[in-house]
Length: 343
Ligand code: SF4
Image (cartoon, rainbow, N blue to C red):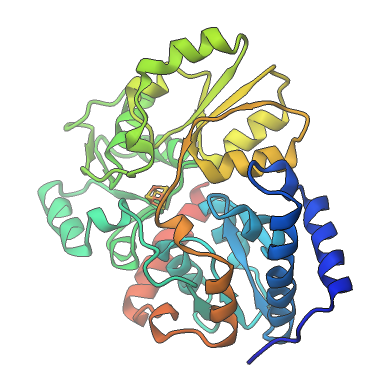
């Protein structure tokens, strides 16, 4: 299906809408880029209405996706919650595969499409359902607490799913009943949580060796020099970063927590140590605040562009359609529902 072609007046109107959304506040986007993008965002928004589709977008997506075509944006937890409530027939998920799978697990009757089939995740790919069965057998009775950045077969072998926003709260509840908990697959987040909760790694908390290739790449040696250059800078880091970095920053949390921190504080500068998309979104939302650039691109998240989304809406490839076998879906949903209940 080919959407209508916008007139030059419609392109101009769409460009102004993108400007109002804050796209010009994001570094590298100028009037020429705006007009070029406007033609495509206009077409995609028309197609979205024709197909009765909805576009959730993770905050690490490209700015033109977040500001131009997304119906709602957020971290994994917010997207999972909102996807459970959508009314549309089709969900075109701008994020990575495990997120689109989560949307399908919560919406089995809907068509869920991941615009770029190759959008995976180093954390999700670090572990399989078979690995979880093996580790569970080694620690009988210990509940398996699984970070949401995992594929459906891993979620299906878990007792409860967590996100960076609620992991600590859920673990605290579980430790009221259990001496030992298995936390998978992010080794750095596991180390941060074990330290925060005062739990002994290898005894009270069993962790896996997966890492996020983005957050694992930050190291703290340069941080003090930045503090000297930018007096008063508030440094915020994602809890997927190493404990040696996390213990040096002013605030550590998930992306939603980091945005709330910026919104509710008044510092001369902010540094957001995470994927670059969050800084782009923060610049568009808070044009009066100053951000010291410090980020890395996630090659998985950034593999989706507007062309992929247009194709996903008009003629999706079979590899982009998300399917989760029903037995796995039901078990994975139970673990996700346990998160909603505990969080
Ligand atoms: S930023 Fe890290 S955790 Fe998120 S999708 Fe990319 S590799 Fe996975």
